Length: 344
Image 1 (cartoon, rainbow, N blue to C red):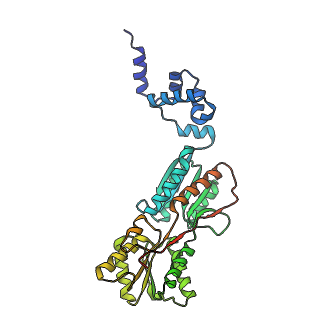
Image 2: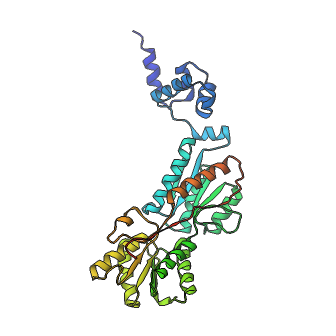
Image 3: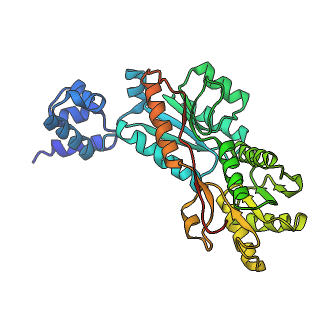
């Protein structure tokens, strides 16, 4: 008994399945099979379903490189964030993914670890995939990164902060204004000796600190001795340590603005260990409004940042740039919300 069909299939299994194999299986031309992938709206639903079924059964994987050559687009987006462990950026990435999924974009994600050198290295690696666009975190990129993107003319959108120069596309919030708003909230609650603890010291943290200082200066309350700033990665444990250092340097502090919620959690735990009543003896405030902030005891006063929306809107703006559009708004301010809770 002849087993030519089985032999044919076994031979095909020993090499990568091609689009021609899929077309032959369905009984259509290779061009039609290709169109079902690249321009599915031009193929009837019934035929498209048959081609997709054959692709699945034969294990066909579309060749993105070949598709990029044919369409002059890679359908790849490069994304650089400074941390994978920080919940702030996992929310941003979720927004990006939801914004591009329906359009079939592949997202290349790199973790810069808050390092200019790492950002430059990762961008150079990702540019080898010829991305249609790039999403960057923040505005303070190195000269090498800026020159590379300008030379290649890759559509680029910055996330989390707002560009002031009128040339760059950005989606985010004013970190400075948010820092000032939280400080004014503490002043309005009657606190006068307000400290500030910060870690990592990335550009967003620096701007929050600038807002804090200006709000205190406006109220004639600023005291440089009430600040503890360290370049270490931010953790709950570090928050506890920095609070102890602050109270040792300025024991009369009646409130503390922590540059993010992680540090604020540590400060609250340290107060509980030391029997410091919150907010009666010391008010504690954070920044970002992570999910557990509302459930801390006491619940944490903080600034809610629209992290998911920033990712979604930045990716949506980038898609428009990739499609050759010129959006009227280069700077999309999604704002922030003061979440006043029990800790202040």
